[in-house]
Length: 146
Image 1 (tube, one colour):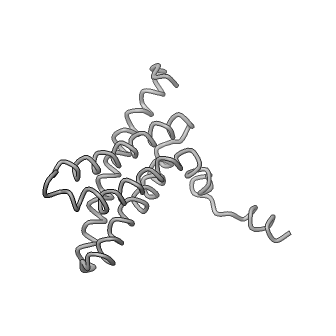
Image 2 (cartoon, rainbow, N blue to C red):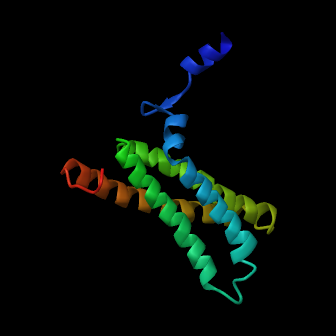
């Protein structure tokens, strides 16, 4: 009985539950987390020899965010829903990055807050630009395979 009560009173953001936001893009979120872990476990130690690896990991998480935007637009998510998804990606990607920097690299709080805000800005630029573009194209019935 208590489970049914909790389920019925689950908080919704713009009419969608957290599960509805995460379910379509769970593999993109997981991929982003794995890219961040590989950035610090593989790319950073090898950055002296192969400096492009850090740029590659940055590009990979950005690509995963972009692919998630496309997937969510296909699932009839609007711009406000995409912004909520942007918050989730910011927390997953940059929350993990600043946690690693704070706990393992001893960075101070001001530095990690700055990095979190900067990284989140990049996520939101991707979400807003691509979201607006794909929503516009979908509204104009442009065939992009959806």
